Image (cartoon, rainbow, N blue to C red; front, side, top):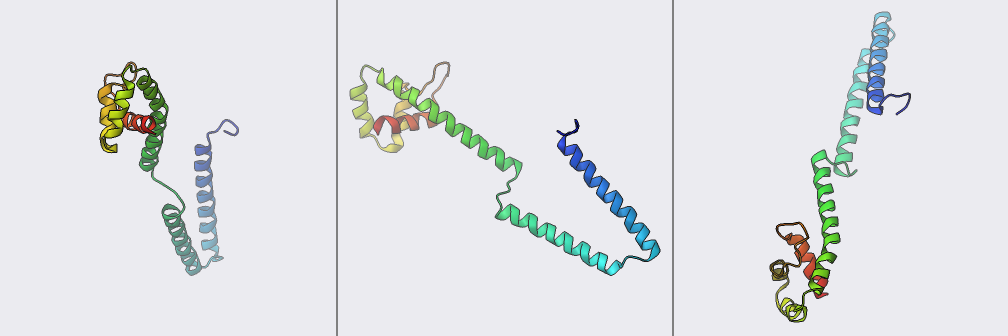
Length: 147
């Protein structure tokens, strides 16, 4: 914030000022005959097509994304981070199991697809205070245990 004004408000006021100034000047130039309307229309069309082309390039190749896309990307990253932090707790709970050696052998005998369900059934992926274990935590835990 500069001078106590939010940046968004300052940008909006700037745009309005530029439009008002250029509109006033254009009206005065048209009255006195100092402007060429054909060139003006050509420049307006060139400006609009350039702006649209630039926006299209930024959306397709520049990495611009919609708000909903950015939100879903952020949620996926956050969920992955939570799983990465909870999986070691699951491993500790596995290590505290008195029958861990037999259960590890049984876990390794299962396919990679079934291992997460096995970890969930054993209760290792259930975090304190949770009603049910998370499947993604169980899958990551199974990877850590069997590696």
